[in-house]
Image 1 (cartoon, rainbow, N blue to C red):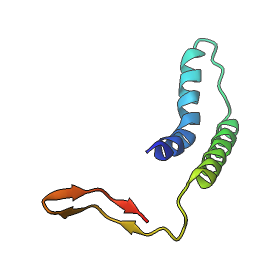
Image 2: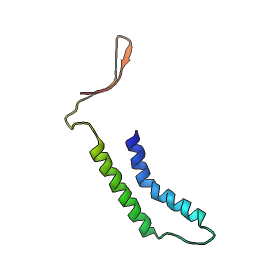
Image 3: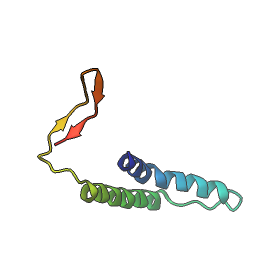
Image 4: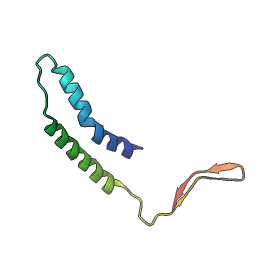
Length: 80
């Protein structure tokens, strides 16, 4: 779940920061050019994807066993 949050933050974070920045500086009428916003977004996306790539601790050969009922009890999913 944390991986999804990091990825979403990397994608939408710069746009949220731009919104907050333009809202706070509305009286001064300063704006950040879209090029800087795009570059920041791409850099954060690359950092997040790199983090997710090297942080994952599952082997590519891992077999997934979905959750199942045995003897009336739900057994959780397993990665073997």
